[in-house]
Image (cartoon, rainbow over all chains, first blue to last red; front, side, top):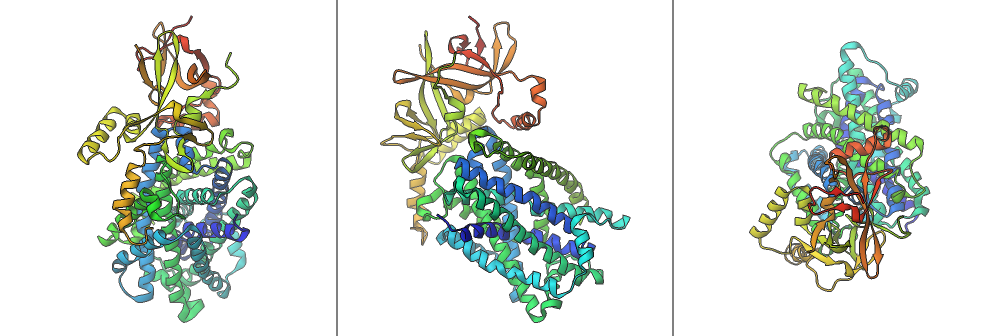
Length: 408
Length: 122
Length: 97
């Protein structure tokens, strides 16, 4: 049975991989640059929803011994399950491409070599890590490397932010001047879309089943959800705060990653640039690991194949081939010259659209005695999730036209 | 008056994980019931396979899958029946006792011919 | 003459009464052991009224049903096996005894 530390590690890696990744770093940096501390509340709100969703994901798996994808097919039938799976596959494909792009951008920051050249090597390293690694190794390695992101917190504190406006921005929207209203709300919506990613709770649920969680783990599941997601949120807020300190006074509107990369330099001097590069590469790598596995898990679980990261690939042929094919197909847009940042923003919008479909069956399962027995959702849990679904619908409705018009 | 121990064919069997010991064989994709004159219908077979799930999405889908199977050489039968007598238990999973079956044909073929050929797979 | 019916295709199908009116959809099938056979005992047909459909929980299920999800009958109509005519599996008919 896993020790408490390792369980928290699952929470942190889920967080680093899911929370802090190319989309959330980009949106947090843009939010800080354009609106100073005025959008911290969006990160807080997104995190709150995520804490509930992750906790539910763990609870469902621990009590029912089913992963989400497995339970969805069992409860709602194959005819239904096909739809969220297809949508998820499409979205994950694009997001994975964006994350690998993020790793490449981080490496570009470190070496100066163009992102496109890194696509194939990064895909190979990612694939190899999954091929030979076990869940334990991957969890621990990425958690430890991810601790580098504390660099953002250090930078944020070193720059002496004004704590009162910061606190204000954390609790409520700070309405900008009228002409900037559209961009403010678009950025808020992007933050929410970037924060709540379904692949996170699918990954978490599979990890919980593979690690053999049971009812006795419900307490540590709660702690893991809260600590893990809060850690990610803290890092995200740190990115926003540093960006606010560095770019906002200069009125810079962040459009490219190379600009964002300068964010740590004022506080960390010559270490700023490389730490940003490494942080970006590690976070996006963590996300790429999570998305690849989450996708393979969902498909394998829907069709009832043998799955699992701890066994050798030859023992899990279809599962291993699924992530292999997905990883190498996902770099195609990057190789074709698609801008990773644009792909990130587009895939975040798509995630928002798919979110209600991903969450709704999941929520219904958590109210079903046959699956979670006496551990059904309480009224608060149901309220938060219903609210998240409505929010996701609004996010989806808002993002589409703004995407078309070219917002952000 | 429903008897005390009844099995719900949909909630307890359909779409559940099919296992043989620890090994996952697939999902219960279909369930066949035989109608009889003057007697209650009998649960006869569990059905598994791509053609079975395809049929659930539509006849067109089933035809497409069968055509693919013909074209690419049949590695497993797209529709396999397990007699109900082979079912040993229904709990979280549906446990069956089968000697020979083609359910893992693709898994084994891919393991041997594709995955197995890639280094570090074993 | 023994005909075969695939349960996974039967559920969700509308059941009609002898007058041709739809009374609901088959949502569950109960089976019991009789000797060493497992035989069908009754069919559950979902006949949810408007009021039930408006509850939040059912609303959620209702939305999913649009995409083909299985029904969730709170209080189904129970039809004994003898009363459901499956000679045309595409059009089950309730022949009340």
